[in-house]
Image (cartoon, rainbow, N blue to C red; front, side, top):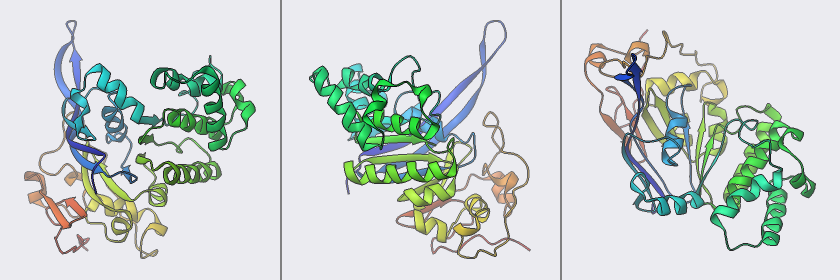
Length: 332
């Protein structure tokens, strides 16, 4: 299956400046060498604790945040080296649904203008009448009444605003959507509605999704594959059910142990992580996870672990992951 998106060695470093002259004295390694690919029509879930770099990856792919290094290949073309005209063409094919449905919509524009804004940039051949008809069609697609087009964002609930954000993203007929925690600010009942809408739209329009979330239950419901991030790096990636059934990295095991319904053994004791997430300014030596890992040894603190392919579709970055899929055991 050909790849729509391929990310190679993506790095996003933010400079730390001090003093009157604002000299650079260090770097925050928000994303540090990330690799993954997405085939058309597939959904990849990107999960991890807050601050691990998930949102930064999504924004770097779309050139909303400048990347320090690496490549973002969309249909074989490196978007990090794209010209302004190539970037404009890319943004018609790749859109984003933001996390906060309250701040992501312009309060000065009515809903019709918000949805039509992208069309005026990318679909210039459309007449005003055609744009209006397209807005009405999109409102119906996301489950909102036609009358919504003349109203303003403050007149809608959070779930309705997120539907408007999805309609705006779909207005230019994209192939790829970055969904940046699109349901985290919503009530549980509304979350389910928006998730089901995304699933329906994915099938209907053959969309490819990068779904960013910290909620493992949501990711399991929506995604074909899951990549687990820790401190700016992906530490494990696998097809969704395989990851939930047989997590290989101790960090993944810790995350899943906190969700009883996500494990094959609901009575399994929860793995409690000690300490705090290290600073990306000064990450630990060796394995970044070793200060908090229940299975860490001296080797983990000294040597960066290799990537181990458990099978062709499942890999983890850990000294003690075995190719045959033997899980790291908790020492008694």
